[in-house]
Amino acid sequence: MLVDKENITQYIPQRKPIVMVDGLLSVDATKGSAIFTIPSDNMFVEAGQLQAPGIIEHIAQSAALRAGYQFKSQGKEIPIGFIGALKKLDIVELPKVSAQLKTEITIKNQVFDITLIEAIVLEGDQTIATCEMKIFIAND
Image (cartoon, rainbow, N blue to C red):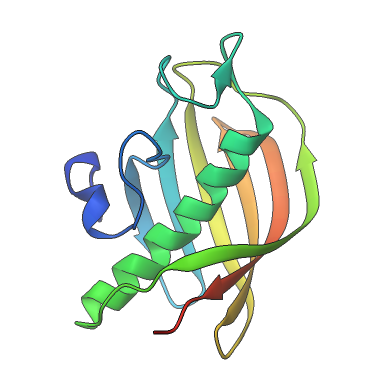
């Protein structure tokens, strides 16, 4: 694991109670994968399941973790990003508390401060959600 749960906040701007990633498994120039085990006290859990906004936030933080790791590895300051658009969101199933999600992020296009990603959220071998997300990086 490249980044574990204890060090996660060094790579993302979010803080408890909104941290939605537990670790960074892999990263390269165009891809990354992150994990998250859903706790029962998560603010996006309702009726024992992680709701759609939680899945979306987990995807965004998975992308942020990948980017944060790359910036920090280059000795650069980690920028703040914002979800600019969400397309082709398909949630097949809402995962239950204690499920471990693995999210694979692929960079589809990057122009200036805008990055288009494709995400696949897996629980075990089953795809539970997919989407495209446009992320804007804030400049000072």
